[in-house]
Image 1: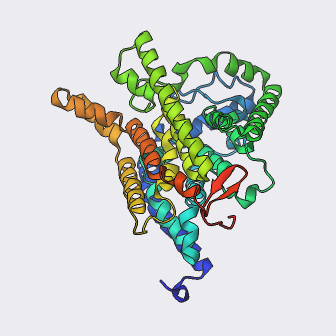
Image 2: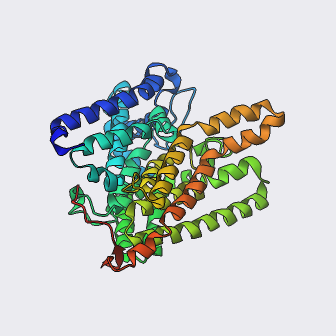
Image 3: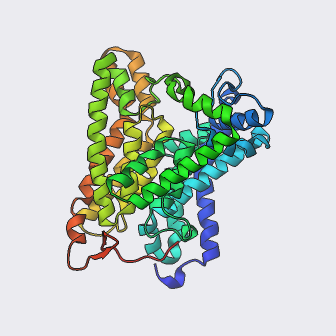
Length: 426
């Protein structure tokens, strides 16, 4: 479409906001207007409870939310301190504000992770952003995050912003690794990105992330010594606080094995073997993508490692699939080349896969027994399978990129080869 017919920037952004609101409305109606009150925003209620516990002077890790959920706070003390503002707001309002923030954060993830495509569309960029964001809000990990009032959207956004190249203008004065460190201090699993820094011998970023995490953790210890002793001394070592590890919601490799493999030492050994294999292959792929200058693919791969090798990865932890889909899509999905066609098919296929609520369909089939058990088990573990397939697809669509980046037109910047056209910082 010609530039003369392109919308004015203000009009484009208004239309983009309208598209996103229309897209998220069915999700919000389902989990806010029509959802049982005793299951309403149960996770953000846990966060708020931690803030209330601090203000009331009661033990943070001994408190439980109201029946019938009776959920404990499971994050480090730094996260409890960040939850204090939630305690100052009525719970009903917190749920709505938290949901709006999740939608904004998910849109931000698409903006930063999809920049290679979005910025190519010029004045149509706001609408491109909206069109890409709309289906992401319907992915079942994302909609489950909205259902529970989860924190994953904010952590994924922080990691994407910290590792993306070109670096977002808003972080121009923030050393790389700071947001990774803060995310790790809030929830331990983002620490896998520190391992990625070490594998890539990015010592400065690793030291910054570790230093940030240690600093805020020590400050939290000074502010909440009793809670810190409780978390690091006992709560961290109690997997039962997280809920039934073998339930369908746990889609990590370990969760799958708890459902279908032998228990005890044999199951543990099998988990360590499979998780170790995924980690070695995944970190190798992430390092290659970093060297190629594909920072979005790099983040996608390490995010997948996090959910696969973690002992517990609930369905909503798979918010990383937003980054994965955009990493697969690339910058020119409509180009008439075999590589572009493969990327488009991979991105569409993964989107459709994650739009389907496979784990819940699977558990319904397993309950029927008989001939339904095997297909039910396959569907029940489909998010874990999606993550493994996504790792393969990311390897498949990028395996020829290294040749392109080592060609005559490739530039070398700071040890990282880059052949993509330079983009203005957004």
